[in-house]
Image 1 (cartoon, helix red, strand yellow):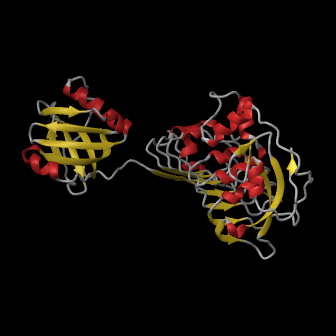
Image 2 (image 1 turned 180 degrees about the vertical axis):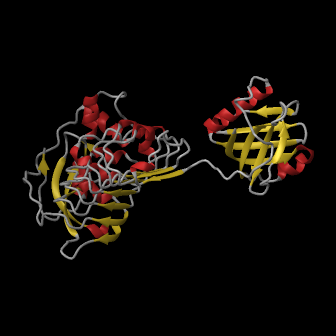
Image 3 (image 1 turned 90 degrees about the vertical axis):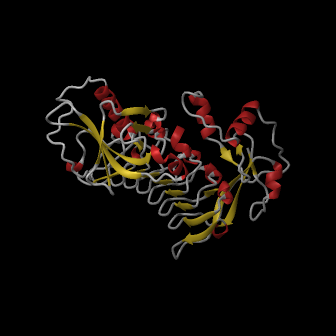
Length: 418
């Protein structure tokens, strides 16, 4: 048995020197071997500098094995002769399997068939744990499942209609590219992936199941940095997108969107927003809070004049209910919520919140009026076509009379009161 890992070796005879020396781990391979002519077992360490390998006898030669941090993929082998300490870091599952076999060897509970080696001659090992996999043909699809060590997975142009359940078990996955398929929905378990940073879902069929956004929850909310859902025939973008607190890049191009989520202005980490070639007629007022590096709203249908019913400014806001105060507090503190914590009725209530130009949530009590904004005021770089205007309408909500008065009035003199 062999495992790919990173190893640092010290000699206890020179412990004072080793302790003061910075540990530099090397990519290596550890192998457990049995002599073909007798019952002697040994462990062989291969590395880039020692391709022939270093043998360590196992019987009556182990001083101690430190496994306190084995759940973090770390352990230490201490040998009597030579007086070496071998510090090992690697995949948790592989390391536990290696230690299990190592223990059975020391307890003489292993059969010859379990660890058969034709020769004690040492061969250099080039195999390492697989971290990237690209699949562009159905014949490339792994029959035995995906390696648990994958950090980057690309599955493109094979006409998949659903997400493979095996992907949901890849706890180390950083990049998932499922673009150019026929996927109609995303399983809720995708939100449990702890390390996912980039998710590419462009050129699929997510628009056929427009209400399926419940995967935006739990771990993915605080890990995802990039989301590409362009070319999906989407008719609306779920307000759940605004829960992605760390999102830096959002691509919504080439869909059938008529509006963007009201809370998009609260995505303070967002730096690149692209929603070109849609049917947008007006933008949410909270977009004024964004500070982007790049914005693309080209080829949309923005109204040259924002219309709305004008009511008297003398209308005062009624007293808010306790439910509204509590809901505003939950969203203001960015407290996570998902099915299992709150009833679905309350989740829908929170998801349908409107957002004031100051960034605070409002539900039933607010002022509302259309305004206009220069897109160049919220971005460093603006991508636009020849016929596009940089002066576009925004649908503004105001949680209080103070917010309304602080906002400059450009067209309608009076707000819509609800």
